[in-house]
Length: 169
Image (cartoon, rainbow, N blue to C red; front, side, top):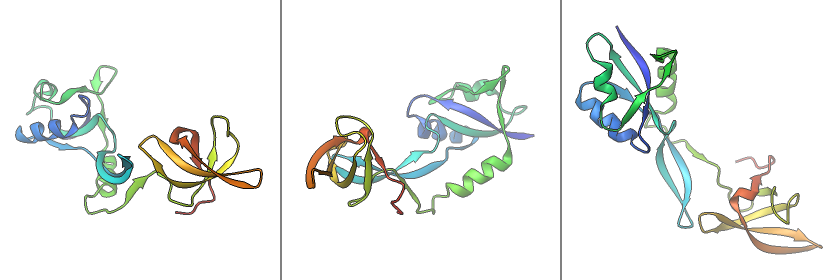
């Protein structure tokens, strides 16, 4: 009887593992989502693994050796519990397949949009509110802060900014 199992892949080799498993006739599934990120100061949408470093395989343990799967290029090892490979319920796989359908145009993004209200959570301006203006490279953002009744423009690391809850995008 075929069952789904969880595999850990080598770093950033999910697609390599899927390709090599498919060549061996082993059904595999790596849920992918569209993610909006900054690249060289521009917003880009990329396909990324929902669970980086992991994928699911469906095979019959009596007809395919787990050693064959484990030694496939790109695969690191089976995720185990009490020494046995972890079985994944078919219902969970079905839900993941529905939610990560390649036709789904939904994009995940944690990037603020121009005009979004931000909270500064770190650094000398901690506790103040800011308004997002634009990215300043991949790691920083240009924001507007209201100081002494004047709007001041400054560049802060994205890590010190959190989007305020009142934004409704």
